[in-house]
Length: 171
Image 1 (cartoon, rainbow, N blue to C red):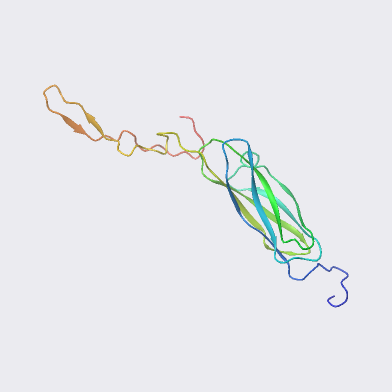
Image 2 (cartoon, rainbow, N blue to C red):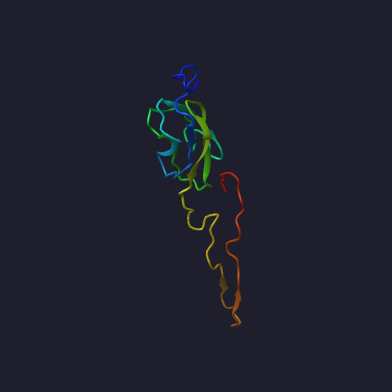
């Protein structure tokens, strides 16, 4: 319908694409924080552009590590970037970094170029001194002199390697 004055299914300016970028943030020890994703439009448009989004778990647990979210992002004419903020929850558990995804779908007046982004919640909790993952630099122990006056020295690994656990485990 080009050159016919629009009508029937005209989707705004030709060739506009939408992308979402990945985001990273430390979890914090308590409360909540916002992990910000940015959705970009390849070029300003003369008509409004919309796109739906939804979160999905990866290694992060929905409702524990982050709050699930879904909705619609709207670009008013002329806008080229819009935020999506996802709430993450702080804790003091020493754990690996965790991830979830935000996926774009059902665009109106644009097409999807990069529809999925990864949100990474980085662990910011330190191991306690001599925790399961830490050992002193020099685990050498000396045995005191024997009654006959001769000293005996021995190297002892006082902190053997701890077992690995996939989940938090009480010992």
